[in-house]
Amino acid sequence: MPLVPAKEVIEWAEGEGVAVAAFNFNNYEFLDAICRAAADLKVPVILATSEGGIRYMGIEVIRPMAEALVERYGITAALHLDHGKSFETVLKAIRYGYTSVMIDASDRPYGENVAITKKVVEVAKPLGITVEAELGVLAGVEDEVSAEKSIYTDPEEARAFVEETGVDMLAVAVGTSHGAYKFKGEPRIDVPRIRRIRELTGIPLVLHGASGVYRDYAEKLGMEDARGVPDDILKEAIRAGIRKVNTDTDLRMAFKVGVLEALREYSGIDPRKYLGRGREEVYRMAVRRLKVISLL
Ligand SMILES: [Zn+2]
Image 1 (spheres, helix red, strand yellow):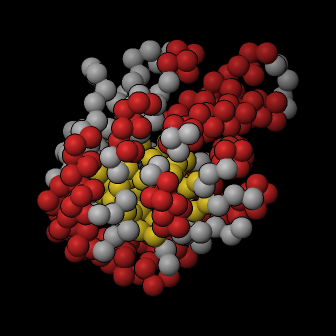
Image 2 (cartoon, protein in one colour):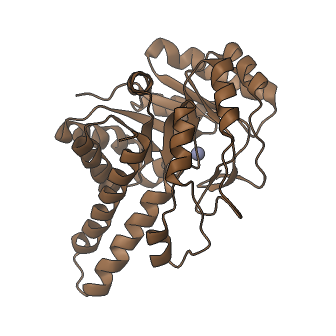
Image 3 (cartoon, helix red, strand yellow):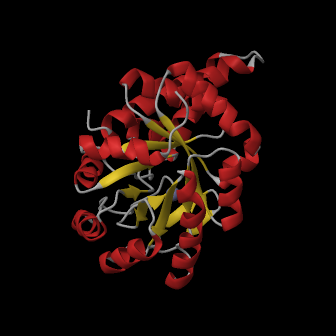
């Protein structure tokens, strides 16, 4: 099974009334764990890398590695660029075989966001590559993407944006933020806003900053103040029209827990002993997330 455009797996999610999980990876261990989890649960998945991930691995190894693992596990998957910040980065991803790209110009004025997104759609669409854009601003830090305050997506503006750009899916700001510290008080997502944006745009919506930041992992890492999106709130958002849910933080936390636990018991130097435990924890977390996101 070759890598498919994200549009195809999102269409599956539309049909099922669920969302597709997009997981970020930065190495072989994460990618293998994610693909195995998707195979075990028999659901499609989106494999994503940020610009930072591309710099870390080198772009030329990403598609071949993803393709080999998708083949190994017999899954349906898209290869997606997360938070492409410039037209050049997006072009590079397309050249290196990505089947889906995000152009994130959400920190620029509306008119500039429209112009650059439109330019990406013009290049990507004829090639059958899916395009995600973002409107509104999420707070928090994710690799190089950071903002202090969030600005919620305006539904009317979203309608105009989608009409003007012809984008396939839209990331919205509805209360979540990037990183492990998403909420100070009670976690809240503006579900009516999701429903309204969905009604007005008619396209699949994407939720960033959606990790669960689960207690059992946070406590093991000394991150007691960390707060994520509770599973039941995430499910509500999916029922309101979210069709792609991004997860990065949860996998990072799981990997670190696995590596730390392995190193506590193992004093040797074989990296497979502790990276392997990290991989196992990433697999378990990916299964946990896929169950929530696929409403299983
Ligand atoms: Zn994001």
